[in-house]
Amino acid sequence: MFSAETKIRVRYAETDQMNVVYYGNYAQYFEVARAESIRQLGFTYKEMEAMGIVMPVVEMHTRFLRPAHYDDLLTVKTILKELPLNHRIEFHHEVYNEKDKLLATGKVVLYFMDMKKMQKTTMPEQFVEKISPYFKEQ
Image 1 (tube, rainbow, N blue to C red):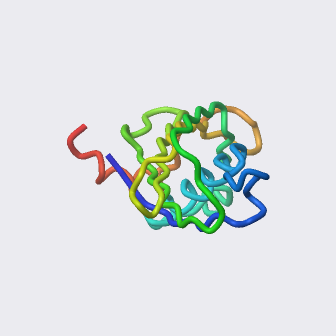
Image 2 (cartoon, helix red, strand yellow; image 1 turned 90 degrees about the vertical axis):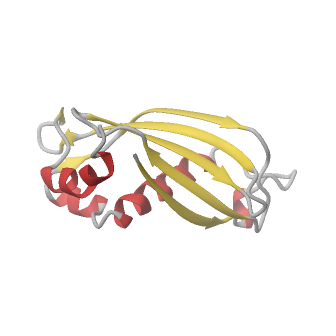
């Protein structure tokens, strides 16, 4: 299993009239956390795109448990529970506030796609090398 944490400060523009983070912003929080978790592995989306691979989101689920507010420092935990073996990768997210209260959970599914053919493909070997050590027991 691979897990990473990313800190995100809630900006004023991300809240609604009730001073609560607008629900649509969680998609961006998850995206930032995914990109940073891959960066923590020593790899980037940019490198993947340079190899001709894109990763469109094909599915997203979010469960809201408690509100986040302006200026809260959030911790977004990104978890890969399984090593992707085909074209599909599933990221699980947990969002916590500074009091370590769980605010939201999410699951985002992306596909590895060949940029030129726009067809499903497998995870690039360079990414496999970076992430495989976290799944030795599988």
